[in-house]
Every structure is written in C-alpha cells, then in structure tokens.
Length: 542
Image 1 (cartoon, rainbow, N blue to C red):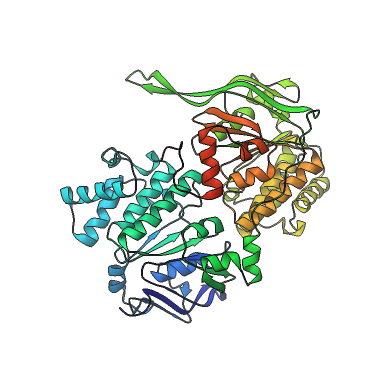
Image 2 (cartoon, rainbow, N blue to C red):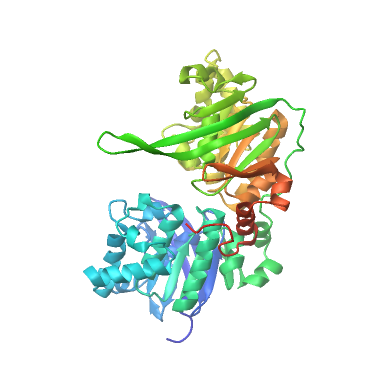
C-alpha cells in the first residue's frame, strides 16, 4: 500500500424519497494515515454518521446514493466493490463501534455467542478456541472476571460494560481501521474517560487507525491527531487538533468551541420559601429468592437522604449511572413509593395516594432525558402541550387553551405556528423545548429535570441551559436537576448532592463542591469531567 490507509475523495451522499432529494454530504475529501486518529466533528444533521456508514456501504441503498466520489481503502475503491469483496472488508479490515450498544447488541444472545459469531465467520474459530480468544478480548477491554460474563446477556451489563463488549467485537479480527461513532456520548464522565483511554491504548498496541465521530470537543482534544469540522454536509475546516483548538479559522468552528454551557445560576436566597424537602428518604427494592419468593435482601437505591429546595433555586443531583439519582427524583415527586418524610409547599405528601396527589400534579412537573421517547409520536405538538391543561383546567375554552399552548411554545423559543406538526418533524433540541413547554404551560412551582441535556449537541445544550435559567428567573421555579454532566450542573445549580450507591457522599453549595471537593469520589468525578483523564483514584472501573 502506498499513501493513506483510507482516502475519501469528493464524496457526496443523496437520499431520495419519492421525487424529493436531500443532499446529506456534499463533495467532502479527507485522508486517514496508518496509525492516525482523525475526528469528524459537528452537530446532529451535519453528515458525520452518514459519511462513516458510507465507508462500509451500510446506508439504506437504493434510497441512498453517491452521485460523486471515491472511498479508497488500501487503494481499493469500496464504492465500486462487489458485495462479496465488501463482506471480506466489513468486520475484518474495517470495524465499527456504534453510539448505543444496547440497540447494537442482540438482546437474545449471550456475550460469548455474539463475539464467537464474528470469530467463526472471519477466522474459523469455534468452541474451545473461540472461547479462549473471547476471554482474551474481554480481558483486553478491561471486563473484570470475564469468565463470569460469557453467559451474560446485554441487559445484565452496565452501559460501560456493554460498550467494552462492542469494542471487543470490533477488535476481534485485528482491524486496520476502527470507526467509532459517538462511542462515549451516552456514558458517565468517569466511564467515558476509561473508554477513551482504552481506545487510545488499544490503537497503539494494535497499530490501528481510527475515525472518531463526535460532537464533544472535549473528547476530540483527548484522542484525535487531526480534526475535520463538518456542518450541513460539508467539511469547513481541517487541521491538527492543537491548531483547530488554539487558532480556529472558520466561524462554525469558533461557534462549536464557544458552545459549552456557561453562566452562573441565580444567587441563592435563604429567605425564599421552601418548595420541597425530604428527610431520611429511602427507596429499597426487595430481592426475592427461593420457591416461596421470600425477601432475602434489598437493593438500597436511595438510602437515607435529606434535602431542602427553595423557590428560585436549583439543586443538582450528580453521580454515575446506578447511583440512585433518578430514583430519588421519582420518590420526591411521589411517582414511586418511598419511606421518609416529603414536604411540598408546606404539605406532608409522603403518605399521599395517587388520587390524593392528582390535585398537586400541575405544581410539580418532570422533563425527561429523551424527548423523542417521552413525546407521543401520534399526537401533534398542540395536543402534547395542551394535554395537562385538559386534565387540570377542564373549564378552559378551546380558544383559551390554544392561546396558552401558543404562549408556552413562544416562551421556550418555538414558533407557535408549528404546533400542528408532530415530534418527528423537529430536531432533538426543538423536541426538548416542546417537553419543557409541556411542563411550563401549567405554571408549576417545582420541575424535576432528569438528564434533559445529555442527548443534545453542545451548542443546543448551551441554549437549553440558557432557556432553563430564564424560565427559572421569570417564574421563581425550583429545579431538581439530575445529571452526570458536571459542566451543565455547574452552570445551573446553587447546591449539589453527590450520590453513590444510593447514599450521599458529599453535599453543599455548588461553588464549594466544584472548587474544593472533600470526598475522593467527588474529586474523581471532577477530574473525569473537567480533565478527561484516565480512571481517577477513588472510582472503581465498571
């Protein structure tokens, strides 16, 4: 081979639906050299993943086509290659890691069978030989006690473990090129740091090249040798990583670099009325064993937590997946049963039934992590936002109800004339604004925000944080903000609770927690979030 390992030349991608055509990628070119990591960076819809899928011809053909371009791998044009030749390249010379391992792994097959399938197809390894190679791969990617994981199914593993299994599958045949499509976006900051270090280490050990696709520039700085910045299907700037970060030339690159959530939360006021408080809150799930299904033990998801939240303030709940953050929020809003005292606007609600809670539901609202999953695809935006009004304000006329919906959409920065559209017709950021409007239309006192920005691009994150801060100021709202993204928490929270395994390991004013953490676990979270270092001291690898 002479020249680059992978070379894209003048590549275009067009999608056809009936007589309509959409140009998703417009004549882009870049190279990846042997042993090099190139990051393809841009926001959702920029064409990053479409470009990556084109390399292995994984797009839905014939709906997708390439009106121009070549994709040269080891001087072979993959676009014009026969299907049988492509099958030799896929999973063997070029492999891919996808963003969400839970949907990429087969839920019906064990880990051993899924890795073994690749070894059988490409290397002819079966039975004992395949098992030995599978154990070796799981060891390489840092899975503890791999012998015990061979018979596990994907749902029995954590998010970080599932992603490690995906990496093991990608490395099974010692590829020359690894394509990683947003492999850390859905992971906690500490697990993200571990996965990045693992990929960098494996790349060096195996002499691989890597195409790394992401919208997170913090990740790019950690792992990439060169960067290609992409927007609207075009590469607008490319260069060495240090040059792109230190001296960006294109306005869009500057926009991305400035897009991190910033600003400060409103000043805390200890005289503000208490909206919600909890004392010794516990949520224990029984573990039943034996023929008679007797309770043998408990999973202590939330174990004795105290908190107070005042009007106009934000309490940030941070910690890794499985720490109990969301369970605590669900307990406070009485969406699951719990023990301990819960007070809401002066009322003890810990013993309230579902029926007794109904009159209070308009005052406490929830915004979930995935707006696409929490918005009904069969309802228009107007129907979604007005649903709460139909329940809590049944006396409103149709005209008054429609005006409230339009006002709520306008307040969150959406054009009210779009309210007759459906969720799939909006971007991720717009859908999250719809979810916020659905909560705000009822004029709540308290809003639980459960990872509301984790699935969004950096610039959209910043916009949503600004919006939440404005709504809080205008309506004197109390926020319970649950997140593993500490940069977003820092921009919003007055006070922070750090949770681990259902318990509070540290709590206090946000400034103190971020600038002078006392607990080793908190220090590890901060190091992972703001430095993207390898597995920090005090954090046990998943």
